[in-house]
Length: 417
Image (spheres, rainbow, N blue to C red):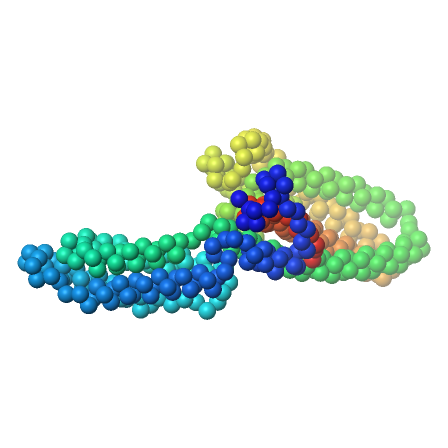
């Protein structure tokens, strides 16, 4: 039921709150509500009152001697159990201190910890209370009543738990938004770097074109056509390798997420982000073969947190992986690269101007730089997309919790880096 008592289940109050104002708004709503714990200072006062009441009951208990008329055996048992009860309760009360902080998180932890301590003391003196109830029933009852009264005010209300969870979520959300802002700044830096490299490459290509127009010969053109043919075949082989490894990508990401790196975390990351480079480094594809077998085992044991349909599709894709074909593609790729290098070397020998060779190398190196920067940019964009998904999930959780707790349909606005 709404603590405000103003709206029915079908007529909930609607609020639109800016993200940066939410925590202040939420705390005010809670303080203005009719929750028994809304006024933290009042809760602490009640706890102190019940603690003092228990302390008075214990002092009365300590001040009253055992009756002379009770049986000797009961009297002996009661004397030893009095010491246990007094020691345990006095120790509990001596260490009992109300915190100075008046926030709900501190209140929740205080109530939880002190309630747990009281439960522990109660368990340890339970038998003593049973004995003393027979020997000194009146004062023992006052001690028990004092403990029960304190126990009641130390109970952690479910709504208090929910309210502190809302605060936790909004603080986590603030952290994620702050991280998002930093990622956006890094992305902008990478984009600026990429634009600079593209302009540099364009200038190099213009210079190179001018030289090429001056020294083109029939022999060079023929060799360059062959180089382009070989490059096309290289691209085909690289695409085939990527296509061969691609079905494993989802499973490899899960293996990495659960720390199942197969003994080489760097190579696992390369298989996810740069499969062609990974295959070149993986001698005889021994790592890929091993991690694939591990993945099959984990899929059978349902340890990779896939849905049944996803796991079934991935098992089929893993079974279809042709490692032998990948090895053959790798061998062919290496042969083609050697052939390209031979052709390029031959062309360079035919060049009359070494400046062109320098420019060609500069263009190639610039292409490599551009590719590396693009990979970094893709990585930043993936991180930003994932973080936005987390932020949206947290936002929905906060809105749902506020509705459950306060009967307010909340729209949390203005979340941006």
